[in-house]
Amino acid sequence: MPLVKMTELLHAVPGNEYAVGSFNVSDMEMAMGATKAAEDLHAPLIMQIAEGRLRYSPLELLGPMMVAAAKRCKMPTAVHLDHGATMKTIRLALEIGFTSVMFDGSKYPLEENIEKTKEVVRLASFYGAAVEGEIGSIGGAEGDMAESDVSITKVEDAKRFAEETGIDAMAVAIGTAHGNYKKKPELRIDRLKEIAAAVDIPLVLHGGTGLTEQDFQNCLSNGIKKINIATASYDNSARTIKEVVQAKPDANYFDLSDAIVQGTYQNVKKHMLIFGLKGRA
Ligand code: 13P
Image (cartoon, rainbow, N blue to C red):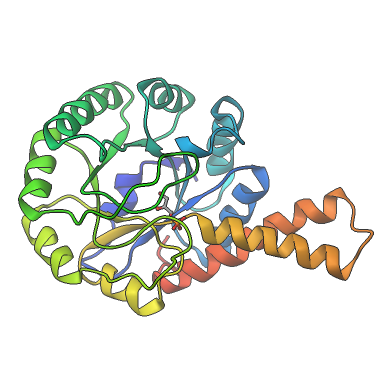
């Protein structure tokens, strides 16, 4: 199955029937777990890595492996840069063959976010790649990026941002945050509905870890087409390693490597089933 573009997967969603999961991976084991889940469920897949995680997984090493894993996967798989912050990293991801990049300009004032995002759209177009932008501010932080407070996306900003930048997908802030929730999130489904009615590009939900099945259903049935999951895969892989060591104190390197594959596999599969992805590829 060829490496595909994220937009191809998002535009294939009929109405609000399901949302495509976009799963963060940081090594070969996580990529193997995610692609195996897609294959077992016959589901489309987006694999991504955030710029804030590259300290642990240099893009020059991880990126080509992600592209190879996507090409090896029997289901349509897109490879995406999550929370791109610098042109240097965005350019490198595009050179490596990522089929889409996110530029996260949410910390800038609206005008500046629009200008910087437009620059990324121009660059990505030379590579035939798609671009995700962010408007409003999703809470928490993805990896090493600075923590931010939630700032709910305004409908008029979302409309202007989509029209002026020419982005292909838009991350909206509706009350979610990256990482494990310290208190129950209050999702603004009312705002999501208004944004979905005002713009016609696919909407993206960040901060998927810790949301309930009902939260996911509410989001995908009101216009979310891409759902990001990172922390839950990292946590489940770490938990699985600890369980293996507890059950088998003389576990060797390969037992632990396999625990990462299994931990990611279980988490990706669980979320793909919730998002309604079984049999969609
Ligand atoms: P979580 O770590 O909360 O799942 O968020 C993932 C995400 O939004 C990546 O951009």
